[in-house]
Image 1: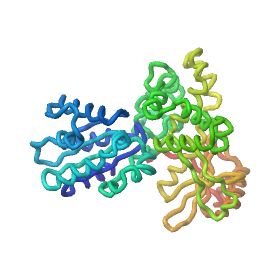
Image 2: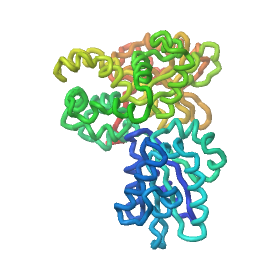
Image 3: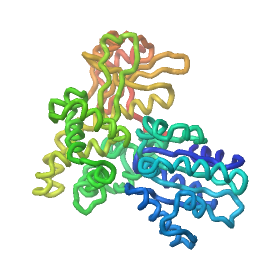
Image 4: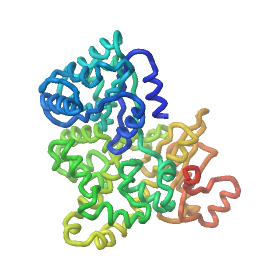
Length: 441
């Protein structure tokens, strides 16, 4: 679908500008490389540096590829050099992490638009602007570039892959390990490739995260240093959120930072798609609903700050195997629980629209979704223990608080269901399910 989207724009007459965004490691660059296999193209990775250094680096790379260009060219000259002048067919210019250019130089976008519009009269070009700053694209970019946003022809978000598709890509894992890996790495294939299908989730954590020579060991600290100033502040806030401080007041009480300061830093983390503000599914029971809460949206960031950042002293003294057994294994199944609820929402959203969760003051509904006719489906999910009839009654209580009525009530569990709950299912009151990966294998 994503390749089809890109090809449809490429086949149009004239030149285009596309914005392709998604979290780090989700596969944006690999997608564009696949798209450009049979096309003339040029690639540049923007860095977090001054505007002058940016132009110098791009020019250096173009000269290394045989192009003639000044040492410190203007952006117009860079665009012209990136698209080989002697070529008559349509070309692609890929600028990765382009947000570094926009944030560093207000003239970048205006120059790009003039260049693309001028080429309408000569050789067409498709400019693909890639970035991992998803929140910045969705919340800040348009205000930053102003009217220039109207010249962007298309937008595409490369989303994290659902578990059912990752299971197809990595068929060597058991269902339990797929769920465990997903809890640690999320739907980011760029992280999954660092794991081995010959190991279970625990073995992969030991060998491919906790060992100092592994790529994922330093992934988060290096990434935050590259993208954010004042890492000490961000580390403090993320560490608090990893301990389930998910409201502004909770973070304020734990960190001691002012609420205004926390809000600014949370906004920056949301621009990097590391944090999200979660709002309850809208129902008639608004009085019983919590206000929006903050969560770490990147699964590996959450795992890193829950276990590695908080346990760094122990990790320096213990072997990776000892650290895993003492610091991770005892609570890991509870850690997987939240990811399991997300997996259940993914499964339901394949059939229904607008899947979310209801966040009540006295309880929650793990999944609420509506079909095309507005009929609701609700579900409760449990990964850690067998589900009982009392869990079903609690779901009904939460539905009453949310003022939700549904004839499609579901309960997902990997540990089984007690006899009274099975009898209720036999009477058609509730559907008892487990997560299915069959479609992905």
